[in-house]
Amino acid sequence: MSTIEALENAIDAENAAIFTYGVSTAFIGSGDRAAVGEYIAAHRVRRDELNEDLVALGAPARQAAAGYRLPVEVTGPDSAATALLGAETECARAFRAMAEQVDTAALRVRAVDGLTDCALRAAQWRRSLGRSPVTTAFPGTAQA
Image (cartoon, rainbow, N blue to C red; front, side, top):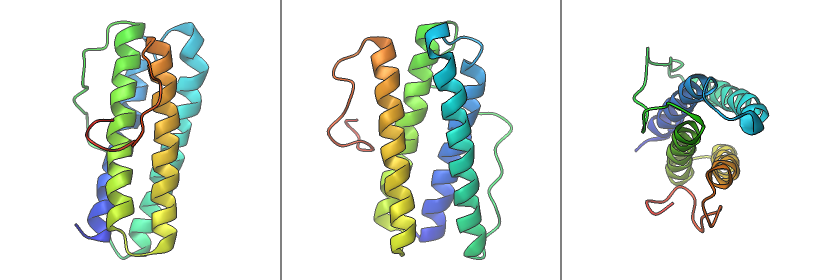
C-alpha cells in the first residue's frame, strides 16, 4: 500500500464515521448527545486535514460516498452506540495501517494522533454500552 492509498483509506474511514454519526444522532441517548456533536466535528477536521495532505502529494481530494452500510441497524440508543463503536474501530484500523505505510514522520504523527483519538472515542462508546474493559490493548488490530 502506498502513502496515497493509506491516506485515501483513512479519509474513506473518516467519511464513513461522519455518516454513521449523522445517522446515529437521532437515536443516541441524551447523556451521549454532546459527545456525538464533539466527535462528528473532530472527524470532519481530521478528514479535511487528511485531504489536504493527499492534495499536497498531488492526488485529488477524496469525496464522501452517497451512503454507507452501517454495521448494525440503528433503532435506538444501544444500536446507535454500537454503530458508533464500529465506526471508531474501523477508523482506528485505517489509522494503524496508515502509520505503517506512510513515508514521512509528519504523516506517521497524524496517523498515531488519529489512532489515539479513535481509541478514546471507542472507549466512550464501550462505556456507554456497559462493556468492560472499555479500552483495548492494541487499538486498530483485528482483536480491538
